Image (cartoon, rainbow, N blue to C red; front, side):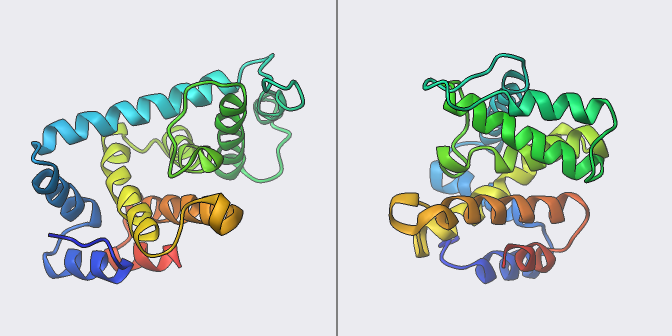
Length: 200
C-alpha cells in the first residue's frame, strides 16, 4: 500500500507499474477503504458535480458574502470574458473566473468542496472547470485525475500542513495549486514524473 509520505513515492510507483498516478491511487484507495473502485469513482464524480455547481452559482449576478463586503467580481469577470475583453487568453481567464466564483460562493455560505481547505476551494475547480470548458477534456478523465490531486494533498497533509492557521495561506493555496498542477499535467498527457515536477 502507498504511504503518501512523498511525491517521489507516487511517481516512482506509477512508473514502475507503467501506470498513471491516478491509477495506482485509485487501486490503493479501493484496498485501504475496502470499497470497489467504481464506488470511489462515483463519489469523486459527485465531488466534481459540487465543484461545477459552485462555479455556476458563484458566477451569477447578486452573489454576496454574508458580511456584504465581497462578491460580484466573478460575475463581472464572466461578463468581461464573454465580451472578449479579457487579457489572459481563454484558458487562464476562465480558470481565474471559475476559481473566483467558487471562492465567492463559499463566502456566501454556498456549497463547496474543500480542496484541500475551504480557504483554497476555488483553485482546483477553476483549473478543472477551465480544462473542461476550453480544452474539452472529458468529464470522466477529469474525475479520474482528481485521485491524483487527492494523493498530492494527502502527501502535504502527512508531511507538512494544509492548514492556514499553522502554515499560512501558502499551506492552503500552495497545496491546492500543487494538486491542480499535477492534474493539469496528467490530463494533458504528461508522465507521472512530469506531474510530480509540476507540484514542486
